[in-house]
Length: 178
Image (cartoon, rainbow, N blue to C red; front, top):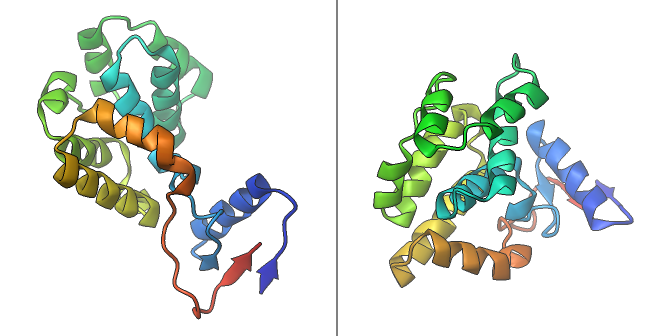
Protein backbone atom coordinates (compact mmCIF):
# COMPACT_ATOMS: atom_id res chain seq x y z
CA UNK A 1 0.00 0.00 0.00
CA UNK A 2 1.27 3.48 -0.85
CA UNK A 3 -0.02 6.70 0.69
CA UNK A 4 0.80 9.83 -1.27
CA UNK A 5 1.03 13.16 0.53
CA UNK A 6 1.62 16.62 -0.85
CA UNK A 7 3.81 17.87 1.97
CA UNK A 8 6.41 16.30 4.25
CA UNK A 9 4.55 17.34 7.39
CA UNK A 10 1.43 15.50 6.19
CA UNK A 11 3.56 12.40 5.64
CA UNK A 12 4.96 12.79 9.13
CA UNK A 13 1.49 12.99 10.64
CA UNK A 14 0.37 9.89 8.75
CA UNK A 15 3.55 8.06 9.77
CA UNK A 16 3.09 8.96 13.44
CA UNK A 17 -0.50 7.74 13.38
CA UNK A 18 0.41 4.46 11.69
CA UNK A 19 3.38 3.91 14.01
CA UNK A 20 1.25 4.52 17.11
CA UNK A 21 -1.19 1.90 15.81
CA UNK A 22 1.69 -0.54 15.19
CA UNK A 23 1.29 -0.52 11.40
CA UNK A 24 4.70 -0.91 9.73
CA UNK A 25 5.70 1.96 7.44
CA UNK A 26 8.51 2.79 5.03
CA UNK A 27 9.49 6.41 4.41
CA UNK A 28 12.72 8.19 5.27
CA UNK A 29 11.10 11.62 5.64
CA UNK A 30 8.36 10.26 7.88
CA UNK A 31 10.79 8.38 10.09
CA UNK A 32 12.88 11.39 11.08
CA UNK A 33 13.93 11.26 14.71
CA UNK A 34 12.84 14.86 15.13
CA UNK A 35 9.26 13.82 14.27
CA UNK A 36 8.96 11.78 17.46
CA UNK A 37 7.28 13.47 20.41
CA UNK A 38 9.35 11.29 22.74
CA UNK A 39 12.61 12.48 21.16
CA UNK A 40 11.33 16.07 21.31
CA UNK A 41 10.63 15.60 25.04
CA UNK A 42 14.15 14.29 25.66
CA UNK A 43 15.68 17.14 23.66
CA UNK A 44 13.61 19.77 25.48
CA UNK A 45 14.95 18.48 28.78
CA UNK A 46 18.53 18.41 27.46
CA UNK A 47 18.17 22.02 26.29
CA UNK A 48 16.80 22.94 29.72
CA UNK A 49 19.77 21.21 31.41
CA UNK A 50 22.13 23.15 29.16
CA UNK A 51 20.49 26.46 30.10
CA UNK A 52 17.90 26.53 32.88
CA UNK A 53 16.87 30.05 31.77
CA UNK A 54 15.63 28.63 28.44
CA UNK A 55 11.91 29.07 29.05
CA UNK A 56 10.90 27.65 25.65
CA UNK A 57 12.66 24.37 26.40
CA UNK A 58 11.18 24.27 29.87
CA UNK A 59 7.68 24.79 28.44
CA UNK A 60 8.27 22.11 25.77
CA UNK A 61 9.49 19.69 28.44
CA UNK A 62 6.46 20.40 30.61
CA UNK A 63 4.16 19.95 27.61
CA UNK A 64 5.68 16.53 26.90
CA UNK A 65 5.35 15.50 30.56
CA UNK A 66 1.72 16.58 30.84
CA UNK A 67 0.84 14.92 27.53
CA UNK A 68 1.87 11.61 29.13
CA UNK A 69 -0.37 12.17 32.15
CA UNK A 70 -3.96 12.04 30.96
CA UNK A 71 -5.65 13.44 34.07
CA UNK A 72 -3.85 16.78 34.31
CA UNK A 73 -5.05 20.01 32.67
CA UNK A 74 -2.34 20.94 30.17
CA UNK A 75 -2.32 24.73 30.49
CA UNK A 76 -2.54 24.75 34.28
CA UNK A 77 0.32 22.25 34.59
CA UNK A 78 2.60 24.22 32.26
CA UNK A 79 1.69 27.56 33.83
CA UNK A 80 2.41 26.30 37.33
CA UNK A 81 5.68 24.68 36.25
CA UNK A 82 6.81 27.89 34.57
CA UNK A 83 6.42 29.78 37.87
CA UNK A 84 9.07 27.57 39.48
CA UNK A 85 12.11 29.73 38.76
CA UNK A 86 14.44 28.08 41.26
CA UNK A 87 15.72 24.76 39.90
CA UNK A 88 15.48 23.00 43.26
CA UNK A 89 11.91 24.18 43.69
CA UNK A 90 11.10 23.01 40.14
CA UNK A 91 12.69 19.63 40.86
CA UNK A 92 10.64 19.17 44.06
CA UNK A 93 7.47 20.23 42.24
CA UNK A 94 8.10 17.57 39.56
CA UNK A 95 8.65 14.97 42.30
CA UNK A 96 5.03 15.58 43.30
CA UNK A 97 4.03 14.14 39.91
CA UNK A 98 6.27 11.06 40.28
CA UNK A 99 9.00 12.56 38.08
CA UNK A 100 12.05 11.98 40.22
CA UNK A 101 14.83 13.91 38.50
CA UNK A 102 17.95 15.29 40.11
CA UNK A 103 19.16 18.01 37.75
CA UNK A 104 22.55 18.34 39.48
CA UNK A 105 23.09 14.57 39.41
CA UNK A 106 22.15 14.29 35.72
CA UNK A 107 24.57 17.09 34.83
CA UNK A 108 27.42 15.09 36.43
CA UNK A 109 26.78 12.04 34.25
CA UNK A 110 28.12 11.31 30.81
CA UNK A 111 25.89 12.34 27.92
CA UNK A 112 24.60 8.81 27.37
CA UNK A 113 24.00 8.12 31.07
CA UNK A 114 22.15 11.43 31.42
CA UNK A 115 19.98 10.65 28.41
CA UNK A 116 19.23 7.16 29.70
CA UNK A 117 18.15 8.59 33.06
CA UNK A 118 15.90 11.11 31.30
CA UNK A 119 14.30 8.35 29.22
CA UNK A 120 13.74 6.15 32.27
CA UNK A 121 12.12 8.99 34.24
CA UNK A 122 9.91 10.78 31.68
CA UNK A 123 9.02 8.26 28.98
CA UNK A 124 6.52 5.56 29.92
CA UNK A 125 7.84 2.06 29.19
CA UNK A 126 5.22 1.44 26.49
CA UNK A 127 6.28 4.59 24.61
CA UNK A 128 9.95 3.61 24.34
CA UNK A 129 9.71 2.92 20.64
CA UNK A 130 12.19 2.64 17.77
CA UNK A 131 12.60 6.43 17.73
CA UNK A 132 13.78 6.45 21.35
CA UNK A 133 16.04 3.43 20.87
CA UNK A 134 17.66 4.85 17.76
CA UNK A 135 18.07 8.23 19.49
CA UNK A 136 19.81 6.48 22.39
CA UNK A 137 22.05 4.70 19.89
CA UNK A 138 22.87 8.05 18.29
CA UNK A 139 23.69 9.60 21.67
CA UNK A 140 25.88 6.62 22.61
CA UNK A 141 27.74 6.75 19.30
CA UNK A 142 28.29 10.50 19.67
CA UNK A 143 29.36 10.11 23.30
CA UNK A 144 31.86 7.34 22.53
CA UNK A 145 33.39 9.10 19.52
CA UNK A 146 33.58 12.63 20.87
CA UNK A 147 33.47 12.25 24.67
CA UNK A 148 31.37 15.38 24.56
CA UNK A 149 28.75 16.86 26.80
CA UNK A 150 25.19 18.04 26.36
CA UNK A 151 26.12 21.31 24.62
CA UNK A 152 28.24 19.57 21.99
CA UNK A 153 25.55 17.00 21.29
CA UNK A 154 22.85 19.65 20.98
CA UNK A 155 25.05 21.56 18.51
CA UNK A 156 25.46 18.33 16.53
CA UNK A 157 21.69 17.74 16.68
CA UNK A 158 20.89 21.25 15.40
CA UNK A 159 23.14 20.69 12.39
CA UNK A 160 22.12 17.12 11.55
CA UNK A 161 18.57 16.51 12.83
CA UNK A 162 16.95 16.89 9.40
CA UNK A 163 19.04 13.93 8.14
CA UNK A 164 18.69 11.57 11.08
CA UNK A 165 15.97 8.97 10.61
CA UNK A 166 15.27 5.42 11.65
CA UNK A 167 16.69 3.01 9.11
CA UNK A 168 13.94 1.05 7.41
CA UNK A 169 14.76 -2.05 5.39
CA UNK A 170 13.19 -2.45 1.97
CA UNK A 171 11.08 -5.47 1.10
CA UNK A 172 9.04 -5.59 4.28
CA UNK A 173 5.28 -5.72 4.17
CA UNK A 174 4.70 -2.12 5.12
CA UNK A 175 2.80 0.98 4.09
CA UNK A 176 4.99 3.25 1.97
CA UNK A 177 4.52 6.97 2.50
CA UNK A 178 5.62 9.20 -0.33
